[in-house]
Structures are given as C-alpha cells and as structure tokens.
Length: 519
Ligand code: HXC
Image: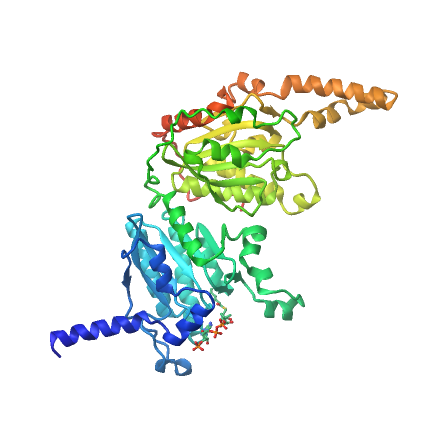
C-alpha cells in the first residue's frame, strides 16, 4: 500500500466512523427532532475546537451474534475541545449505535476522558441519549457503569461535571447524571427514571405516562433532580456554555473574571422603595437581584423547583457570585424541605468551586405542619445550616425584611461565619414575628380581658410595642450581629466592596476524613 493509499484509508475510516449507526438510523434520529452526538458536540464547543478520541474503538461482545455488527467508535463520541477558549472534556452517547446503550468498551472510552479531565483539571460535560445497559453484554455493561460512577464520585468537588439529557436515561444509568453538579433536560425527548411505566404498572398497578413519570417538567419542578429544563437541544447546549462561564476549571482555580463596564457605584433608587410598608405584602426578590447584578444579568438555577427560594449566578464587578435569596413572592419566602435542600446543594456547589456567596434574606421562618415534619424538615433545614456553616468562601448577607428564628440562623447569619452581614432599614431580625410572639407571651393576659374589642386593642398595643423593640435591624446591629445598616440603593456598591475586601480570605475547617452532613 502506498502512503497515499494509507492516507485514503484513514479518511475512509474516519468518514465511516462519523456516520455512527448509518444513514438510515441518523435519518430516523433527526426525524424525532434530535441531533446526532457529533452535531451536539459541535454546537456545544467553540467552532472547530473538538478533537475526537477513540473513534476506531469497537465493542468486543460476541453474544447474540454481536461480533457481526460493529460500528466504529461504538455508541459514544468522546474527546476534548474548548468553550470560550477554556479546555472542556466531553462525551456524547450516540443513539444511532445500539440505541446508545452502554457497552464495556463505551464505558472505557468515557472513563478515559473522565480520567484525563481530572488530571488536567478541566470540566466534563456528558450528553446522554441512551437505552441504558447494553443488554447483550450483561454484567460487563453494569461494571462499565460502575467504573463511570466511581469516577463521578472522585471528580465531585474537584472539576465541574455537567450532564445534558437529550433522550432516554433509565435504570441505574440515571446515577451518573445524578452524581454530577448540574442536570439539564429537554422538554420533548428527555426522560429519566429508575423503572419505566411498564414496570411501574406491573408492580404497583399505577398507570402513568413517560413524561409524568420522568419528563423534564416533572424533574425540574417536582423531584428537583434536574436543575434546568430547556425547549430544545440547541437552547440546552447554549445554556451549558453560559453555565460554564460562571464556573472555574477546577477547585483550585477561580471562575473567570469578566469585563465589567457596569459602574460598581451605581445608585439604584428603585431599591429604596421596593420593600412594601406592610410586612405581609410580597415583592419580587428577582427584581432586587437583577438590579444589583452586573448588566442586570442573573443566571437562575433550579428556576421551577421550590420557587420560595432563588438560587443562581451573577457577576458582580466581573466576579462570579452565587446568589441565594428568599422569594417573598412565592409562599411568602418560607423555608421548607425542598427549598432547604435546593439551597444547601447550591451553597455546597459554590463553596466547592470557590464562588463567593451573596445571601438575600426575607424569610418568615420554616413552614409549620405535620406534612413538613413527616417529610423531615428538621434534616433538610439542617443541610442548609450545615452547608453555610461549613462554607469557607466569602459570604455576604443582606437582610431586606424578615429574618426570624431558626430561619434567621440558617440564612447565613453572622455566627455561621458570615463575613459581612448587612441589613436594610426595613429589616426585622427577631426570634419570631410580632403577631406570633404576642400570642405566645400575652395569650393568658388576653384571655382575662372581657370583650373582643378590648382584647384586640390590648393585642394591637402589645404588637406595636414588640415591633418597636424587635422589628428592626438595630438590636442585632447593637450586638454586632449586623455589621452595618445600609441604604438599599447602595446595595450593589456595598456588596461589591465587601467581596473585594474578601478576595484574599483564607479559612479552613478542621482536618477530617469528611464531614457527616445530615443527608
Ligand atoms: C442494546 C439497545 C438497547 C439496549 C435500545 N437498543 N436499547 N440495544 N441494549 N439497552 C437498540 C435497539 O435494539 C435498536 O437497534 C436501537 O437501539 C434503537 O432502539 P429502538 O427501540 O428502535 O428505539 P426507540 O423506539 O426510540 O426506543 C428507545 C428505547 C427502547 C425506549 C430506549 O429501545 C428501549 O426500551 N430499550 C431498552 C431499555 C432498557 O430496558 N434498558 C436496560 C435498562 S436497565 P436497531 O439495530 O434496531 O437500530 C439498565 C441498568 C443500568 O440500564 C444499570 C447501571 C448501574
């Protein structure tokens, strides 16, 4: 064979490999509104940056006549490229090859890029569209999954791991995505469940559709398994590019600093009147976040799940900042099981990746009731408490209005090593709200008073007395639990300056094998 012939053979093999499971299967795949693995990768990464690895790998299974059906690259495309010039490792299952089902060799390919990413200190993005374990390979496939899970675990908190679900993801296969930092699902084609509708029907008799059991709507709003739901694959891939811009390459680096043309001392008069005079009236906390963030941009995470708390990223003076904020517009911003675990997870993600945390507080307390207690609100609340107390990244807290009781403590109070704790003049920092407090303190005295009107008058007087004494930030400020009471319109400037002074902050926790967060 001449060198030219050898070259031609290489080109031929590459062309064949790039066709995955072949033209017909690609057509069928496209007809479902889905992109192929390579098309997805191309859209995700900077143009022309993708370098594919292991495209000549084939499976080694001989069961069920499998030795007669081989596709180059097998059911996954792996390699590296860049997003905004930063190195990214990537793998995308190829549904056109045995439904993207996991073979032993596929798992080896995925593990190879995961190992490299960990050594290099670069994020891994996995794109999932797969029929699960390759049935013909039996337990070999399960071993492959386990190898991947082990690497997910070892990479956790070291390099960012992001998963896109663009098709089926069933059985134990769901656990690799679940071990990663962020999951994104498409509305139409993605679903995740441990057992599909047929098995559910057989075992429990329940009749349920694929979408209701494990679709993007369900996981992004009910289970909280997915942080993002997107309309289509293109939007999803662009969203991942954006997400990556808020994250560092690894746990030893900072997130990239963005140019900031937005003045850091911008005065936002609108904030001086955003909190209503009545403590029971809601307002939109997202408006506050957008107002103080660079260019008004806020990248929300988990938007549809536990809407009573908001989490997400913004830039402040170009620095990536994680925001955790109660939402008075939804359930009065109360903390419950879902809100607690949503925020706890986010706080830990920020802390793992050196992203400072801004906490905006307006919380009436924890949601009372048997439903919450039975669901373990104590444990879930403890997660958030733990996450804040354990975090060593710079932490700036601004209390806008209510901050009562246990919820006050949990929301990054001073004693949980809050670095700067500010309050607006409208802040009410107390053990509990005035009405509740007077009911407890004065219940017996009220009962002794004759006549409803007289009782009301007495209660109102006591409530006013309590409010005068406690429904303000000054008792906490007098004790140094609040570092300063600030004018709302100066919030952007004060927060940015606080983070600037904290840039060299060094704090560590005692050495231990690992903590025992109440999971
Ligand atoms: C081998 C598979 C496969 C699998 C699909 N295919 N799933 N091959 N192992 N698990 C093949 C099909 O034979 C077909 O091959 C091609 O992929 C496309 O599949 P279709 O069924 O034609 O596609 P579609 O109608 O879109 O349905 C997709 C599907 C369905 C819903 C994913 O294929 C399906 O239900 N597959 C089985 C899913 C499953 O039970 N997996 C095991 C779960 S247990 P041809 O040659 O015709 O193109 C598990 C345990 C993991 O995953 C544990 C990890 C710890």
